[in-house]
Length: 325
Image (cartoon, rainbow, N blue to C red; front, side):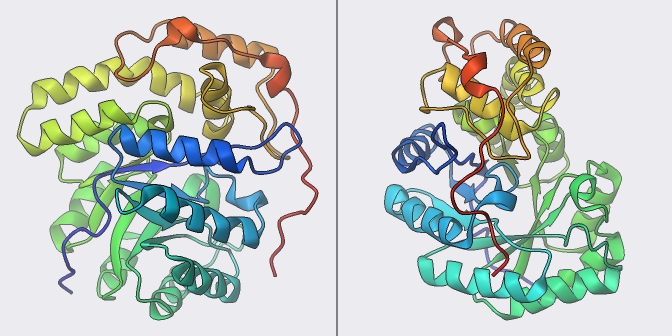
């Protein structure tokens, strides 16, 4: 199946959902963060993904995030919704509503907890793709879902006209190369540390967590790869390495990203919703030690970093729980 040109861009941010101290969505901070990452060079924003705490957002919040994103972007960036479900019927309903709310694309994760067979995964993706006119990114993250999308399934998924891309958080570069050779699926790196390695073997771009903090260097990496300037891309990759390690290694990326953004004064609170909690003292100390190694990263000045371990401690119970329907 021949798909149209890349409808998403190359530098996509897996956006955190800023919250108040009591765990409600902070819409003003959300708008500011969206504008920040777009201004810094992001082509698109994935709202309500893993990093956006999709598991604990309500459907109403997910749809409003799409609407707010479209308003803030004003045509400057694409808004992709990642808030699916491990229930196919619920996912279809949510994606239909997201399309009406203005989403430019949808990211569909492998059904989690159910542990379906490859036939079940294929059916889930196909039925969702049948239900929308939006381009679909298939999100392969077996560390969270318990089930990988296998090579043979990718070949079959690629035949659907609406399934045009993959977010790969599996890190099997031999399989990535194999799928790229046999399909025209667009590949996005779903692992911040592997963005440049993935681009070097033919990936199109990245859907990054660290890009919440520093989208500019990823723009530089992608642009450098596009013009064949590996030296510049590698230089930026090396500069980002301690920041990526701080964000992605010690606690869930959502937790560390909010902790760092709050310390930089870019969001009003580092709060996450339970069962996520803020970093413990020893975790916060390790994150801060990693950040002390960050030098000359475009758009980030850690000389003004003021972490607040007390503000980040614990997790919030929102007034309205996330619901299935």
